[in-house]
Length: 601
Image (cartoon, rainbow, N blue to C red; front, top):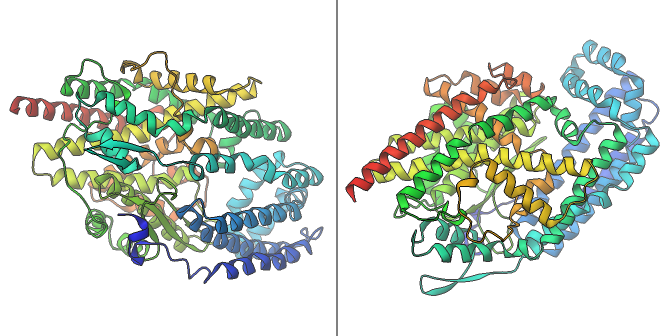
């Protein structure tokens, strides 16, 4: 189903935020009143009452900005919508104005000092929820520049970050429709159709066809490879400028220090991925052997061993299933789940210029929402239960943590979502009736773990190495980035894939939007699935205590401290072994079921 033909219950409704765009613009202008109030405190924050007033107005400003920003997600429904492009520009300009007008605050707080502010917080009960915020602030205080330099940086922030917006325009808004001849008719190549061809076309007869379709699918990347490379270089150079100006040791340190994550945790994660890449190679060999392919190409990698698995899920069927799967998490969880599923909170169906993928967004007093691109497959069910994990996490944190502690960092965000994926697989596999269904579920689950663990570690290494190149002053270009991506891809198991055209470079790396939007983000997926697997093991033993404790914790401590509270230590490589052992067992079981299937054929 296309979004344009769907009923309103399957679409976002933000009327509770703003009844219309004019009201949104009015509220944006009303921010000036809060900005003026904050400006009146300049030079006065060293007095307790003024400090307390600053915190109250800052909280209100954050809420209003979050509310305004949430409404702007409407733009993701049609990236060619000029009205929302205008609103987004207004919002961006206002944020720059705010940052410039209030650039004096951080230097002034730094001048007041940790000793005084910590004393105020300890002695005043109404301020104690700000303890972690200011622990973090003073950890980063040495990187805060003098007021005049902070103001200058805020004044040029839009131009320095325009490369990210240019990426969105190039990757989405300027993307032209592509058509393929499939099943006797010319069809538009949507993500759903592309996935169907990659997964369900004939293994041998359609090898060339899959390759051709793949080339068409990524043609917009290859055709604009030089532009994407230059955009990425611009984003990385901005990061390198930042570390030079502020005195960080590296972009990696700059990307991790906010969560107090040691560089060693990042390096250990990459080590765990590289040392266990043999599991991915073993998985690829199972598929190559089953399909009896002389050459096994990257475009054969998504083929389903059980291609005739036809189970489809309407949105309603998926919601019933998800509620049943998550019953094990108890009544508190079910209550929050029902809130997250209310009409108007989820936009389900895909459309031509709608943003790809899925996400959940909310917090700071604004209810969470979910963007989907529903295609009736098990993958859509898995995506929905994943995003609902985010929304429920947000609802728990908002209910149990006072501002600003409800807001949790991304490294914790992916725990609740990937936990739900473990539970969905467990339920479906235990209730599967045939070996064909078991094979389909096992293959899908292994691919999900490979994608969330190995693939994200691979991406993490790519962006670390590309950042290091720019730090060393090495100019980037399309071929250099393509070669780097391919080299790392092979380190993580793709070296056993045959090359359809050994001399051809592939420029698919720009599909990873996190590289452009949020550097040093992707590693968090791999960390999170490791943490969620530990919680999943506890839940299988009917222990949901640590899960609920985690969901309610929000971001009131550093991430590693919150994880320590539920007995998880990321400082050792051994933490990754339970997940990897489970993956090994699933691959072994898939091999067994494939053997019985071959014997029956």
